[in-house]
Length: 358
Picture 1 (spheres, rainbow, N blue to C red):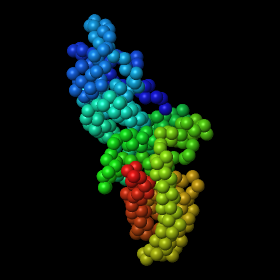
Picture 2 (picture 1 turned 30 degrees about the horizontal axis):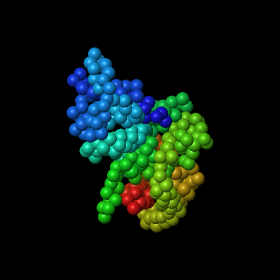
Picture 3 (picture 1 turned 90 degrees about the vertical axis):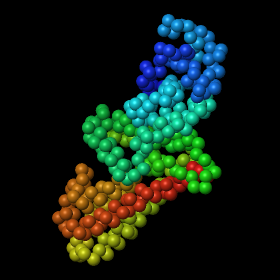
Picture 4 (picture 1 turned 180 degrees about the horizontal axis):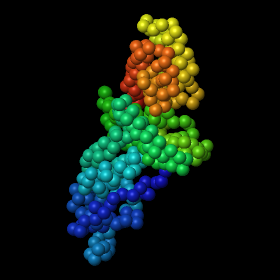
C-alpha cells in the first residue's frame, strides 16, 4: 500500500487570497489565516511569531515549514476550516482508517481544540465501509462481488485490495478515539465488529508484509490486512473471535442442522435422506471445510441454495428443489437465517471487544 503522502488531496481550497501566513508542508504551500489557526491551536499560532518572511503570490508573508505527512496535515487543515472532508476521502477507502489515525495524531500533537468534532468527520465513511447490520454487510458484499465480476481478469482483480478498506488501520484508529475507560458500560464502536470479522476471515498470509504473499493471490481477488498495525490486545481479540467462529460453525454443521433436519415432522424419509446427504456433502463442508473461514458468507450460500438459488448456489438449489418440498426447505432455511443473524449480533462478545476498555 502506498504511504499516505502519496494519497492525493484536493488542496486548491486551502489557498486563500486573503491569507496572511503560508504553511509549507513538504512540497506544497498553503496560504491560510492566522486567525483560523490561532482559534483552534495555540501551538500553530505560536509558530507564526518567529516565521521568516518569504514571497508568495507577490506578497511577503511569514512562512512556516511543517515537517509532517502531507496528506495528514492537509486533511487537518481542511478540518480546521470545517470543510466537508468526505470528498477528499472517497477515492481512498482502503486507507481511511490510517488517514483518520494520522490526523488525530496531529490534532493531539498540536493541541487542537474540538478534536472530537474532527474525529467525527471520519466516522460516516468508516461506518459505511464496516456496516453494523447484517443487511448492510450483505449489501457491501454484493457490491464487492459485482466489482470483482467487472474486473474478471488476472491483470485487474488484484486491484480489489486497493479499492476496498483495510481492517487493521481502522482498528488502530479506534484506539486513538479516546473513549472513557472509567465508564461502567463502555460503548463499542458499531463499525468495529465488522472490521474484526473481516480480519478473521483472511488467511494468515494475507498481509502485504508477509513474504509468502504472492501476486497470484491478489490476482484471485484476495484482500489483505496490515497486521503490524495491530496491538497484542487486538491479536487476543482476534484469537477469541476465531475460536468462537469455529465453535459456532462446528455446532451448526455437526449437531444442530442434522438434528433439526431429522426432527422435522412435515418431511418424508426420502426428503430427509436427500436433505442430510446434501448437508453432509455440501453444507458441512461449506462451514467447517479446511479452506472455509467466512461463516457469514458460507451460511448465506446455504440459505440461497435452500431457496431459489443464487449466483453461486444455483446447481445445489436445483438438486434440493427437485427432491425436497418447499415447506421443508423453508424450515431449514429459516433455521440457518436465525443462526446467521444471532452470530452477527454476537460478534462483540465473540471477539471479546470489551477488552478494549479493560
